[in-house]
Image (tube, rainbow, N blue to C red):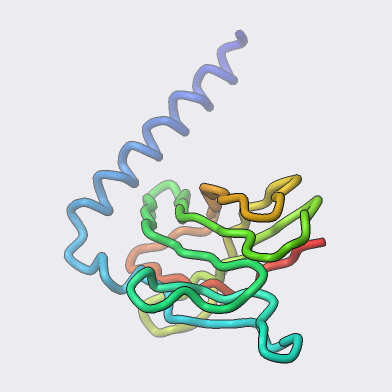
Length: 149
């Protein structure tokens, strides 16, 4: 392995470890939880996708997303959002993508995080890890879109 690749891998590991430490030490963890949202498209009574807070009844939707953790390191600009997505439809999807918007303390959007997966079958649960490359201090996030086909 060449020296540049070793340095990159070590720096990435340090950034992720510092991000985890920052999140544990942060007194504002609750603000990282997304507000319940849904797609604007609906098919009769059933939404295409919904965010779920984990406390109330699970929404009637094809794809239900629950984000349970966010952490990042503003010094290096890396972060991640983790959670689970459930395929509650009767269809198998060949591709699913989650898009999260990143917001600063003034509620101004400054970036996005993405997670994607090939092949999410009917009834299957996906433990996702959305990668963020624009993480800042006091970052909050919201699920903005779920694309699938």
